[in-house]
Length: 73
Image 1 (spheres, rainbow, N blue to C red):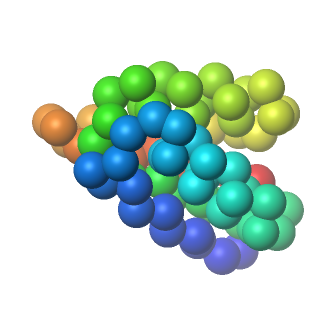
Image 2: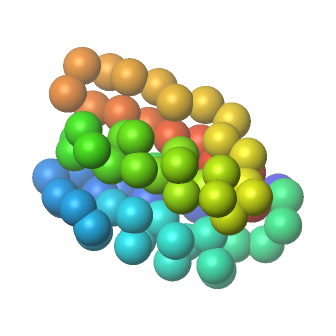
Image 3: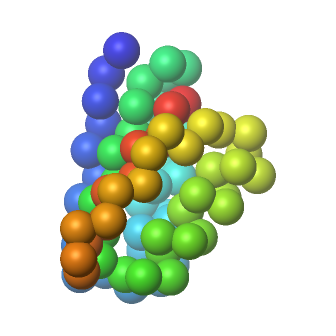
C-alpha cells in the first residue's frame, strides 16, 4: 500500500477536487490518497465526489483552518 499526498492548501474550487481526482486515477487499488487543504467548500465536495466514485473516505481531520481527508482507492 502506498500513501499519496496531495497538498492543495491555499487553493480554491475546483483545484482541490481536480488534484484529488488526478491522484486517485494514478493510485493503485488499496492505496491511500491524503488530501490536505484549507478551502472549506472542498472539505464537503471531495468526500461527496469520492462516494459517487464508489471510494471509501477513511477519515476527515479538522485542524482549525486546515483539513486532511484520507481516501482509500
